Image (cartoon, rainbow, N blue to C red; front, side, top):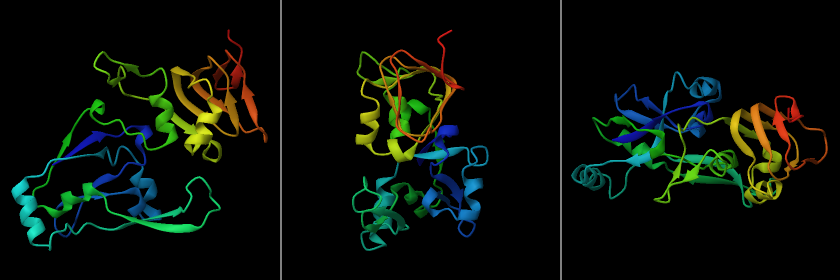
Length: 231
């Protein structure tokens, strides 16, 4: 059994659950396995409403039987990822990373099922866009030291990959912490922006690329028209 969560606009890149036409079994399809002509459909959260949370439940006796019949391994599909030796340097030597997805194991068993769970069960931080939300005022620490949000429906965050993809670059541009996003529907930052203290995003906040490094001063409000008056 695979625990799955309902996709939101922020989860367009999560692996989908599909069905093998030949065997009838459920299968996990990662975005790197999607053909270019099917990418638009794969990112449609109405067509593919759920994504894998990487929480799996497997009967030990069934797993042992499967391993015994395959010389001690699960024959999971190999996924190729094109990367560089130094992930912080796009000009570094290109390499191919080979990996398998554990969630693909559901395709090895007849009768595998999915169970929808709530978003508090799965809060992935795979990109700096995710980290931006997790560090923001949307979350607070509970008495049991857990990160908690009120409804787990988050604004869509799009930070320019040229300047925010790597953690060191991300941290350097938010030296005073993440701006407030409590009043934001979405946040789009294009270009090289660094943020001062006590910045507030609201509505569909957007900053455009001016062609050079820019700074949002302390206490400013950023909305649909960029840096706006506080009234």
